[in-house]
Image 1 (spheres, rainbow, N blue to C red):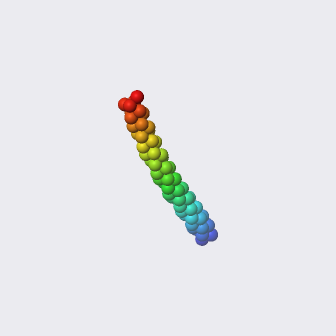
Image 2: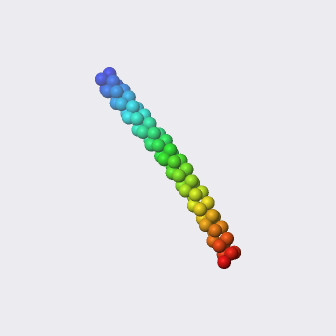
Image 3: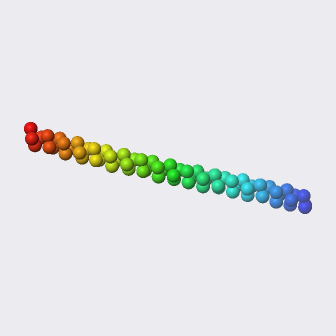
Length: 69
């Protein structure tokens, strides 16, 4: 009975460590995914702003050209 209890305790301890390791990996993946998502959003927002600025200036130039032609 004592041997069974010891092996059960060891198995439970190992499973707890495995569970903690898996949980830690999931949290680390979540943090890296969040960081990647933030970088992606920053890059795309900069790109969107640049496209809006360029298209606005392009429309302004076309409008200016149309007025004087």
